[in-house]
Length: 140
Image 1 (cartoon, rainbow, N blue to C red):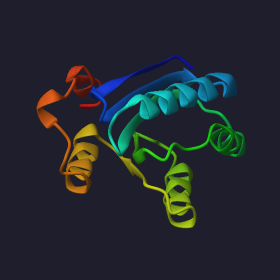
Image 2 (cartoon, rainbow, N blue to C red):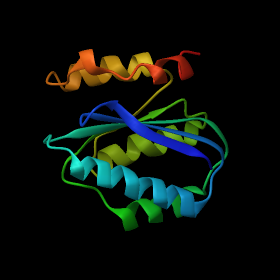
Image 3 (cartoon, one colour):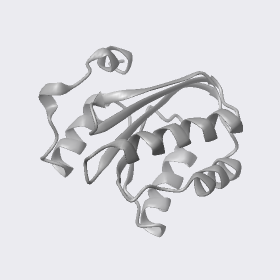
Image 4 (tube, helix red, strand yellow):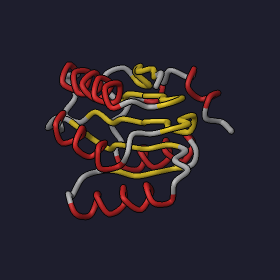
């Protein structure tokens, strides 16, 4: 599972793009990197946008859940947005997990939808500092 992790807005929103075949080890590694980035930020809440639209084979849901639990959440974790998820079952699981675990998770089909949602949820973000390189990838 090749992946890239970068700031969408420095110290405010992390952008993660996953592609190809996913492995449990790479998923865990990426989640630890994200957690470290969140905890290195001076902000109270850091949001994450994860684009999974180019994943061809993902880690099994129960195994993914175990990895997420192992890595844990940072107290600074804000909204966790999943982009371009194809599976209705996964989308339902995210919605259910949001309710059951009282976490801030949502799924969207486009980056534009995700950005509009985050803008409504956090008015303190510096939208003038957006790293627009990610906008082209999710425009379709």
